[in-house]
Amino acid sequence: MAARSNDPLKPRKQPVQARSEATVSAIFEATVQVLLAVGYRRMTTTRIAERAGVSIGTLYQYFPNRRALVAAVIARHLEQTAALVERDCRALAGGSLDEMTVGLVEAIIEAKCRRIEVSRAMQEPLADIDGVTLVKAAANRAAGFVAEILTSCRDAAFDDVQRLAFLIVTSCRSLLQAAIVERANASDFAALRTHMRAMVGGYLKAMQRAPAGNCAL
Amino acid sequence: MAARSNDPLKPRKQPVQARSEATVSAIFEATVQVLLAVGYRRMTTTRIAERAGVSIGTLYQYFPNRRALVAAVIARHLEQTAALVERDCRALAGGSLDEMTVGLVEAIIEAKCRRIEVSRAMQEPLADIDGVTLVKAAANRAAGFVAEILTSCRDAAFDDVQRLAFLIVTSCRSLLQAAIVERANASDFAALRTHMRAMVGGYLKAMQRAPAGNCAL
DNA sequence: ACCTGAACACCGTTCAAGT
DNA sequence: ACCTGAACACCGTTCAAGT
Image (tube, rainbow over all chains, first blue to last red; front, side, top):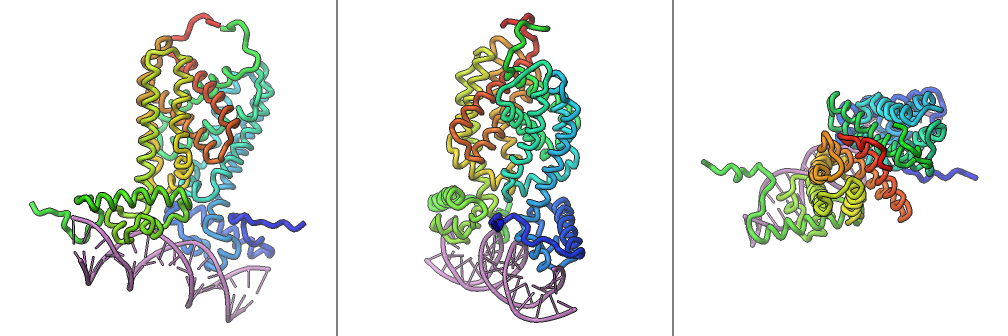
């Protein structure tokens, strides 16, 4: 079966020789740099080709259009972010509900705020490419890790864990994204952390399968 | 004082006569229709002018650029949404924390899902215009109403109410927006409602100033 | 296999000329 | 005061010609 890729954002040609690999890499890096330097609206293919040191024709040999370029950049960034959440989640396995609440919030904040300029620069092109799909995919990946550790929680159990984890991730992500785009300061982020903990913790407690019974406090 | 608005180099005009008001209104409506019909990417100024029954020059007499057109449409929609939240909030004054939880979630769902196609169509242009600012402004307005009724809660009190309300609104809005953009079905929305109640309720309980003391359950 | 850049198509925006 | 639409500028994309 021949794979028929109709996806307009998929790369057009795969690099075969070594020099073309270098070309693709240069175009890719140039895209990131131009995006960060001038923003999406002023990010022209001419500028990217210039920056990458190749002709405009070469660019279009590997990427079908301008949007595919940013899509590639964003997809990679989202994957890296999900991977960071995964890494931090591993340490939480078998912990208590309260430990997980704090740990999860921290993991998501950490992941989202590393490369904060990219997170901010992503905002503009996200809607222009099929960003919702990309974000949802990344959120689902991260939610998978979160669901896994929630299942391992030693003092609580949940139904519908995947959805629960997805909502936690999505909610935290969008609150953080808003703060990042608005260039919130350190004290705003500190307050946001407190509120996110309360939100995630309260949510998890409300969604517990078997309630604690009598009040342990 | 010489009227500087007669400067021929200055674009952007306010409608003065009745016919120009009609023109502006027609352009405005055409923008909504074209946006809904073909999406933001294919929404050209030519198409809008055509649909409005005016020339392209007339369009640019009243709107400085394409983005301003969508910004106007979106701003109006966001204002209407905030107003709906306000209306539904009024009924909740003086209620219990549980009543408010359910009522708030319902108010936000209702407001966001009325004109659901516009909410979906908004997604694409939002980042291209200064949408974050608009959304934040609308969220702050809605958060104002929410904060007001939270203050009137008869069995709970909160610190930092405005921020708390803002996070509730923002969190719910982004979860709903994601569901809308992904064309979630009725059962997805039902589950989302349940989870949003748990999240908001849990969050509010965790953020109470004076905890209930002994477990009331 | 890979690269080049002039040429093309399209769209946002302007402005001199109308009523 | 308000409208018109040809013309301009710019940018994404292509393709015939090169190495």
